[in-house]
Image (cartoon, rainbow, N blue to C red; front, side):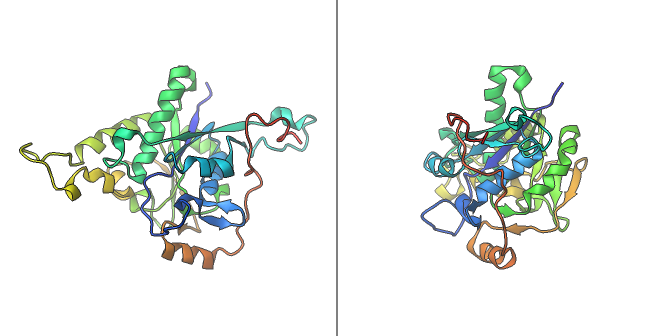
Length: 281
């Protein structure tokens, strides 16, 4: 039976000092090439069946205007020896998921966006058919830069087991925006931890409300805190030689000084489902 891999791109929940008129996920990493597009390309190269972008309602139109509703699987996008090349193409749907209202200002950090995106993908596809339920989730972050092409040769590894990208011995557990996979069971454990490790509205004795800055501590957790107990000892580790964080202005300046000739992958182009013949030309 074919296994399904869902790509999750957490956008909502980032804390950044960019203070631009646009969202941090829309910062350019190359000419006409945005940070969120790099994450979308990473999911496509990884072989995801669908891509779920978790973002707030005010950001969704901006991303959708640049990205559209689908992207072609790069493995099937152009095959030289096929007579009818459009017949073998494999479009990957892109879905936009808003954070639940009940989570806003309570546990809406960046890592929770990844967890919530996986929960939503599993719920929506599972309601259609058990055969469509994702067997695994691949998390790709817009706030770190590395070549998304490196996932192309590890598609088989993604289907057979869990993987985690590693740069200089550091992973997602060290607050680096590097891709990794999660199973449904791991997602459930992370959801349980979000409740058990966070403070609530009341103190432990439930006699009085906590001060505003102490309520719902989970919302301020970073990646290392959320994934602290994630067991990656059995994961296959894939080395990333060149990596740069781009979640703040200082790191972004370092990125621009290091990566001066980044080119947008050819598979990234605006595409809608109601377009006729655009991808077949």
